[in-house]
Image 1 (cartoon, rainbow, N blue to C red):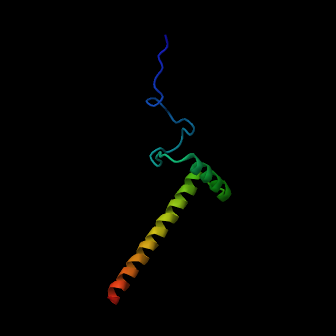
Image 2: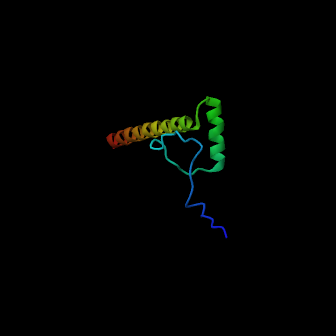
Image 3: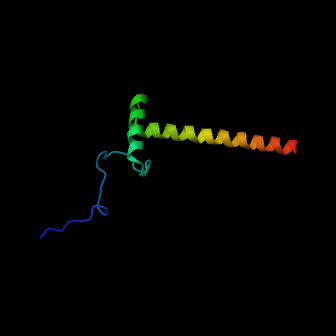
Length: 81
């Protein structure tokens, strides 16, 4: 009789044994988004990790600018009242 371990309890990532695992984290993403990320990374000729980092940084900067503009608008509105 064979004993099989549940796949969700015993798994290993062996595709890159020399990867510095302290620098990376796993996260879930929709398959279609991963496919799009692969295409963008290929077009940019960089790794998916670098492409993802670049896109996250762009969005973060955009949101900071948006917040700054909103706070300026709120201050201007307050001054006008």
